[in-house]
Image 1 (cartoon, helix red, strand yellow):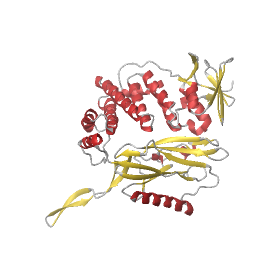
Image 2 (cartoon, helix red, strand yellow):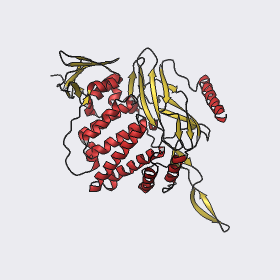
Image 3 (cartoon, rainbow, N blue to C red):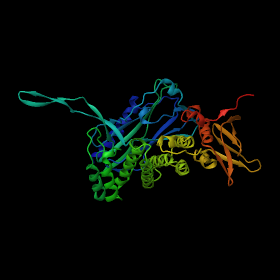
Image 4 (cartoon, rainbow, N blue to C red):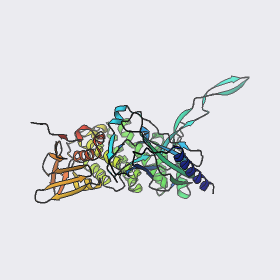
Amino acid sequence: MVWRSAGRFWRLSLLLGCVLGWGTLPARAQISLHLDSARSQYLVDECFYVTITLTNVGIRNEPFLRLLEPEIAIVTFDILGPEGPVQAYEPGGAVTLAPWAYEESVTWLAPGESYASSADLSWGTKLMQGRTGGVYESGGVIRPLPGPDKAVPTMVLSAPGEYWIRACYTVPHEAPLAAVTLWSNDLHITVVEPVGEDLAAYEAVQTGPYDEDRQEPWNAAAEKAECYERVILDYPTSAYATYARWSLGSVRGIAGMHYLRGTPQAAGCFEEAADLFQSVARDAGRSPFGLRATEAAAKNLARLGRAAEAQALLEEAFVWPSTTDSDRARLLSWMDHIETGYFWRSGGLAGVQPTAELSVPFRQFAEALGFSVVWAGDSYAVTVSSPRMTAVIRPGERHMLVNSVRLVGVRTSLKDGRTMVSPSVIATLMAEHYGKGMAKAFSPRMIAQAQPAP
């Protein structure tokens, strides 16, 4: 009953906000904002991801800013939790952008088209008040000095009860677009206390070293590795065992990258981390958390020089229906890092990595992005199209035609009857489809360039 009342209060607040101009939308903007999550029920202190989707509900092309990460604050979140009142979500590591950065992030949606991004809302920050800044003596009594408020990381789903979350997309004044404010639907989730094996696992996590500057159980502190191992060994079917594997994988990966960098033990750390992250991915499935675990596994495999295995993981994740547009741009960037050997070099392991030229299945990747693909058997030409882009490639050629412009700097081939292309082909098509702002999501070498005039 209490939370039904809270839900009515939330909806009433949203309605009043719209009436008073709080959620108003200028007439020119024809974009809607939707918020969703993989589940409607979570345990206390579980990781929490949401999916943000912008949709063009108008009849003309509409511009938007593709930077939807919470740290950039184009999209912000209000959370009404059991501890009330409504709180603004405070991400860690907030980023301030220069005006030109907004200009370079402008992308476009055709009528009926959507652009989605996932956001990790697992951890936020909150001010810890009443911290001791020292002590003083007064009348023979030792009294604490008030210390400054300090922002510390904390889990967002830290208490059982009902939560309502909504997102707000706002075009900043510095951006080269007309002012727009969009409010999403209100997303309702329930957080419950752990019981049984979950409770035993959760209590085991709490036995690890306590850090007053981190008010959350899952972190990559090496001191907590033992308690993570205990959870994994003693409570393997608990939901919390998944997060223990994630955290232990992070501990091992950091050790290989830093404390043991360049030593024979580092390879073992990367291998264990890759195994742990793949286990997390199997548990989490095709969810945003499963995607992040898959990416982490691929990075550690690439540091070991196992480029083909790393590429296979990223390829599989790219074509998941649940993978968002911004996720796919990031996956292409990781493939580029594998191709250039960046991950191998960052791992610091001895040896020389052979040069790897990655090729991905063109039709699968293009169709995952919503593009239409037609293959002409007589000429072997493949035509891919979207509302704002038409491209033609021929296997074996190092150029492609995009909107009748010849672009060079790509690779194409025919393998077992399938057209294979370099990741740069897919990145170029995304840039042409969404506008030049999308090109800034990739390294310059990933975007094909117009052939210079003779």
